[in-house]
Length: 257
Ligand SMILES: Nc1ncnc2c1ncn2[C@@H]1O[C@H](COP(=O)(O)OP(=O)(O)OP(=O)(O)O)[C@@H](O)[C@H]1O
Image: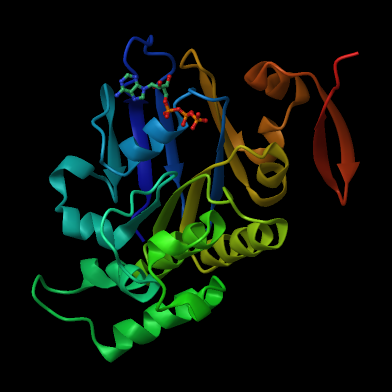
């Protein structure tokens, strides 16, 4: 697998100081969480890592080569992106949407084969949306749509998953199911890099964390080293109580008196 790397990377947020250059490698088997308040730049970072936005400085490398030097088709076989917001502009069924994940693997005019359909069906089953295969995506609930988006990337089978708030719209059972699925992806030698708003889900599931501050400051490393209450309080500008449950820290916001 070709690991994704940020090298001296400054993401381009209009009007913001450069802040700290990002230098990290998302190694096979790792599960990263990106934490930060609204507007800190999490989505901008994810889109920059996917090659959809140009960095202000530095570069994003895939297997040691800059993304700019790699054909989009090659990139799409290696990187999968689950967006935070989706525009379902034209009517497509759930199955048609999941099959889009096979496009990087087909030649331009090649039709999907039975194997592709099997692959898509398995992904829809894993995300518990196979029963919706014939429904139009724009008729689904927010959580169902989110699971179809994740199934589409599962169908794509990238080495590196980039996800923007993958637990958005999901009920507790499906949040856990999705994080479990991503854990299995990482255990099988792929890598996961996701923005999360839920600090406790990140503390429980991620082995690496990147904290992104609104002024461009950042720190990253193994989750245990990053889960320092004082740093998290500064990150969110919110006082926290820390308790330990099941051998892991649990952070609870302090109520104003
Ligand atoms: N095209 C643009 N023009 C001007 N400012 C922009 C543009 N795109 C993003 N921004 C700003 O860049 C900052 C970072 O946005 P981004 O969506 O990356 O934040 P985020 O950390 O993902 O936030 P959230 O938690 O709310 O999803 C925000 O202040 C946003 O308003």
